[in-house]
Amino acid sequence: MVVLGRVIGPHGIRGQIKVTPFTEHIDGLMEYPVWWLSNDEKSWQIVHPTSFSVHDSLLIITLEEYSDRTNASGLKGWLIAVPRSQLPQLSEDGKEGYYWSDLIGISVVNTQGEFIGTVAGLFETGANDVLRIQLPGGKEELIPFVDQVVRQVDMRSRQIMVDWELDY
Image (cartoon, rainbow, N blue to C red; front, side):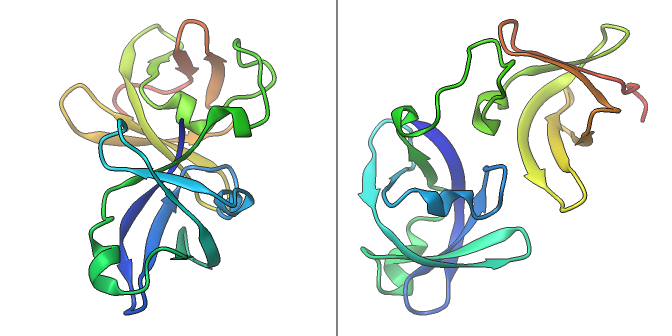
């Protein structure tokens, strides 16, 4: 399974959910007619999204299987995934591209070889994408995911090199 989003809570009284997508385009999740939901990444529940709307960086989703807020509120924090077999095949080295979900957990180092942290997530701002980096001390830092900053993404060694100082 490839995780493509997370449920952040219910929306309204008719069982809709608010979703943070991990896709390149905010509505990319809607390309898949069937989703798998899990709160532990071990057991998965199949659901069918029937409609959506975009609100800032979130999706408001109606699922066929949920019709009231009480049931939908139990999905808070659950992951949304699809089988990797449903996604376009990419090379293992990342030269053809990579899925955002594959970047989660990758080490981030600067051009001086200093460890900055690990990728905790990504999000789209409209102007550019942003890496959420978990720093060793537990804090989080945001780094623009643009060519001027991200020098190399090496999927084989699971490392991203950035032109970024430790004290930015």
